[in-house]
Image 1 (cartoon, one colour):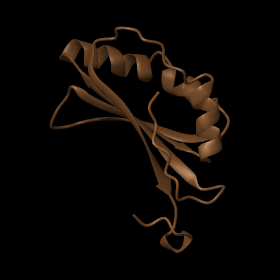
Image 2 (cartoon, one colour):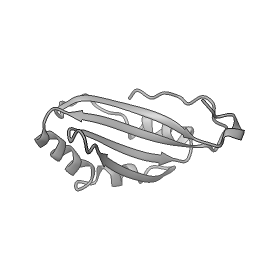
Image 3 (cartoon, helix red, strand yellow):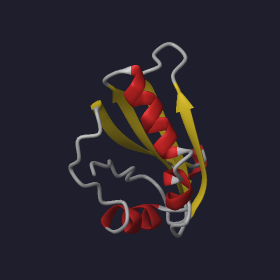
Length: 114
């Protein structure tokens, strides 16, 4: 799992963990959405310590793009997930491209401005 440390955030700062997927075709996008939502992957992720909310987004302009976005209580919680239950095994799921990103949720007065 490739993740970028936000590096600027004080302890206890929430982060957004986002997985962006570009599927190879409409059928794969529908199956992936079904796996995330109907088959319970997002619900399973939400059982991990520190995961407080989730949403799955579909790109209106490109139906092959999907985003699973999670709010996590801290980088420590995300790192615990990433090194344990979040380890992704190399499996061909029909994705053309997949990447994950981490953003900080913090106030400017905490020194988190870009």
